[in-house]
Image 1 (spheres, rainbow, N blue to C red):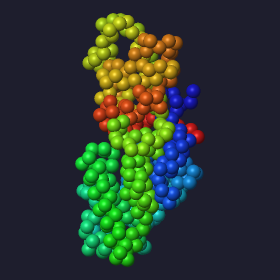
Image 2 (cartoon, rainbow, N blue to C red; image 1 turned 90 degrees about the vertical axis):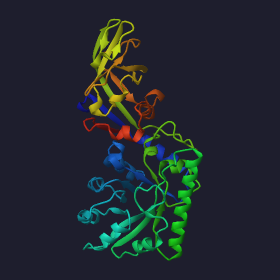
Image 3 (cartoon, rainbow, N blue to C red; image 1 turned 180 degrees about the vertical axis):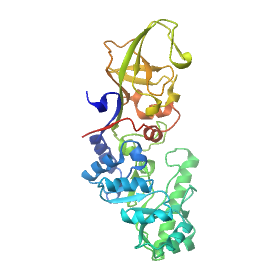
Image 4 (cartoon, rainbow, N blue to C red; image 1 turned 30 degrees about the horizontal axis):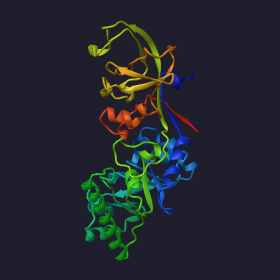
Length: 375
């Protein structure tokens, strides 16, 4: 047994990511490239290792949230374009230049402040257009200010993008709003082009925009959760079903086994009461590792010896309990799979049970869990 697998760990199957990438390529226009979204440390899976592997299989366009995330990729020798989604304070813009990153220009006032900076060279950037999400970006119809942004002498504009906020919904009003956002973006870039402005590469769709609005024909699609073989939630709208393979497997070990008599209780608050004589195992993972505490009492399942066992009692900081009464030959040290490819333990199912979405579940997996990469 290696130290990394002595307690609890995450196995990351990189070949599955390559399979998912090829599946996505089947549904996008031939000229469209995939921009791999690796923010929040690649949703908790390790941005450096993920990006290095993507470089090996031909992906050279990336997006992250913060300056620190971009610098990390460069220190990991990741090649290609790295777009920063978030605002970078003016004092730190020299680092954007130093590490050859691409800054998002969030609005006109930010562009104006950059124009006042004594930067040694032009700042590579993409300009964000607000088509109705009202989070960041310059308004899609503010052409007087947009024109000034593109002609800002301190900016080297490499791209233009916006973000769809209801592309994962099949509700009529949400689909209509998505169509409105698409038309606003299209009209905006068309008008700018007619003014002779170089808008650079264009991109609008993230994962669900790619699944549900394949008719769009821009330079990039921004892919995050789909790359990892997952959907954000089981009930999100998918016009297209891809043959995705999960690449994240969360595992831990059994640390003790007890026989509990009928009517005896287990764990904090005596939350679980045995309805029969039961065999209860403790496993070496808890909410400090990112397994959600609010799954306590929610009938979450884990996999032991190819059979499902129910999570019982309150999930503790460093351990939790499962009912293995009906599973034979279980012993201390055996491996338990908490997130896997079987439907009851898929990340989407756990996220649904804990009333969140898959990206939050993954990005909260703790740093003390070793990431073990398998090719």
